[in-house]
Length: 80
Image: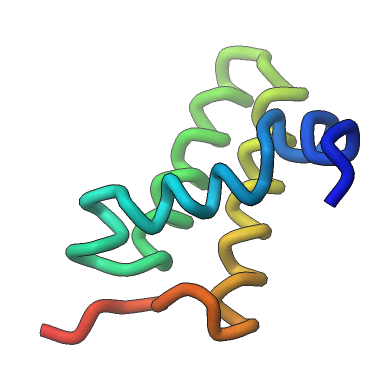
C-alpha cells in the first residue's frame, strides 16, 4: 500500500504493523481476535479522552487485522 495512505488510515506502516502483531505475545498465545479486542478497548479509551482521530486510526488497525484473518494470513484463535 501507499505510505501516505497507511499513515492517514492507520497512523503507521500497515505491513510493519502486521509483522509486529505476529511477533507479539498476545497474538502468539491467544490469536488475532484478542489483539482486535484490545485495539477496540484502546479506541474506546481514546474516544473518552477526546482523541477522535487516534481512535479512528486504532479502529482501522483493528479492521486491518480482521481482514488479514479473513484472508487467512493471521490466526484468529490459538488452539489450546
